[in-house]
Image (cartoon, rainbow, N blue to C red):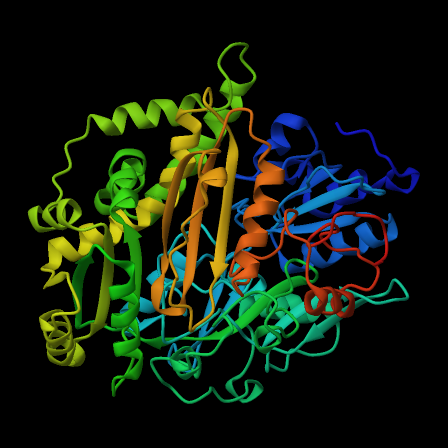
Length: 569
């Protein structure tokens, strides 16, 4: 068990145990490792990991944390993309408690499924499954981090995903707890549902879905998108979406763990059943930018999604992301979540065996899936061989003819080189899953080449909407420090994911600072959609936002800061 730094921590574990039982209060290093270590960033010690099974237990546990002056990290999926889901290596002045929400996963549908109340641990894929029979879909669909990701986590971090028409995950309707400047806990119910006045009564009714229709405010107008689409069309000298944009900061939205969010109320969207998918290839990234601008200027709705990946990213996904896309294709997202959890547990066990290390399960998975035959459709392979840059474009069925005409006229022009084809169902599925596999490929490459690599250096970048030179070309003095690089992302929004593996002997912290400075000199915003975590200092708008939410720095101390001392500087 972690030895408390703070004398006031004494007795907290016993109090937590009284609330939720010893089984759900984890204190040993082995039991807490799954929660304290992120997939990419973040690792440290905690006093305890709490696994409450009810919103009332969450509320009561928070009161114990405040009484014992503890730092609280409210954790959902622990993706570890920027280290904000767990403790880092800062000089904390208080003990830390992680409160895992994953046991509290209820979802309540409202207004014929036009809205959903998603409790703290409800996952995106569970919401997607629940909505499908109603002909609806959530704000986000499967994306780079949605396997196991929670709805609340996405809203807390302004996750954007691939949906061009919808923009960052956002709501102004949530129920959450905050600690004010006097150290008092406040429960704020902005769900638009009258649940009473007593906090425990409110939270109990909420979890059970116990309210009358008259207690609920009406839904917003129904549509397939938001005003964000028109925002993207404006080729302004600023990014379309990024974490410090005040437009998308409101209470739970963009709070980055600086509140304890019990539930959010989110709108849903009509499910696009009749979709057409086009696969586009070219050797010049400037042609893709010209094509992007042609679509932005065209009449009618924007495409549903437009995902970019390089031919090199395609190859990496086939080699190092195969377990991800093959499992998704043949077993589904629920099985993949279980597989990821099993792999994480196994790596934790192997790490304790001398001489094995913490990546044995990854190596086993890599070897096994390399033996699995998986035939990639011939036309995808041909385009991979012909073209350096690929765009996967998905449009509504009623846009199919207009899209085909635009693409035909675009590539018929002598100044544009490239090609396209409309995917059949198998090609569309394979292309989508390969694009998804890219997201895990660099991480697996790093794991399999640890002897040659020092660390991963990753970015999610929001480029200016008017940036013509959107694809980064690194100067030789930086490129020579990298063992591997992969570029992919949400092209129409100009949000790119850039995953690099630094060579052995390279200082990854210094390298990241240099690369960040290059991006910011171009007017880009970093990060775009994975929030600040423990590796990015928050800019002034976010610092002010965090101060308003958490004046005593009680929640997730260290996020967006280089120090985790109590109180804001």
